[in-house]
Image (cartoon, rainbow, N blue to C red; front, side):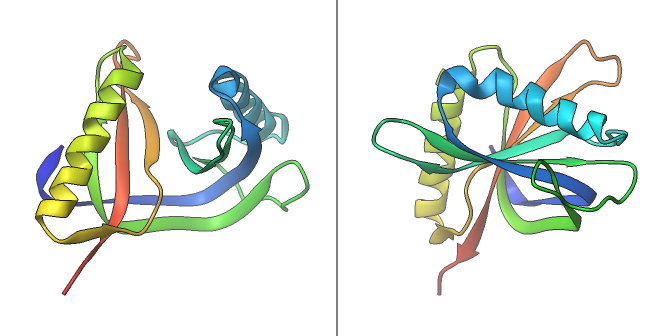
Amino acid sequence: MDKNGYSYIMMKIVAYKTYFDVTMDDYEDILKDFTNLAISKGKTITGPLTFAVTQIDLQKRMNIDLFISVGKCFKSNEELSYRTYFCLDNMLHGRITSNNFITDEIALLEDMNEFASDNNLTFTSPYYHTMRKSFSGEQGWIDVKAKVYEND
């Protein structure tokens, strides 16, 4: 986790969608569905995919918001929504670089929570996960960020 400063998320010309009652087994399918929806609308993907889990129920079903920058504006419809920009600042930032996502995510979130507690910070957003890859496409990682508020 980066303990030296805050990070941010800035996206423009953004396609987004919320998926409801998602299980862990559905992750790959909804990521493909969302990407295919953007492409089927004739949009060129111009940035990395970002998602946030916004709610988890007792049966471990989740609501997930997905965001991606696209090349041109479009009119929102029932399948896919549009916003001109999406911006969050004052975010704690960590990175998952291994293939052991679940174990590493738990460790990272514990580290972020401990840092927030030690520094009198309160989380004001869900954890946003941005899927990234190197220019060569050979190496990938996930940036994890959450907005915080500095308590008085």
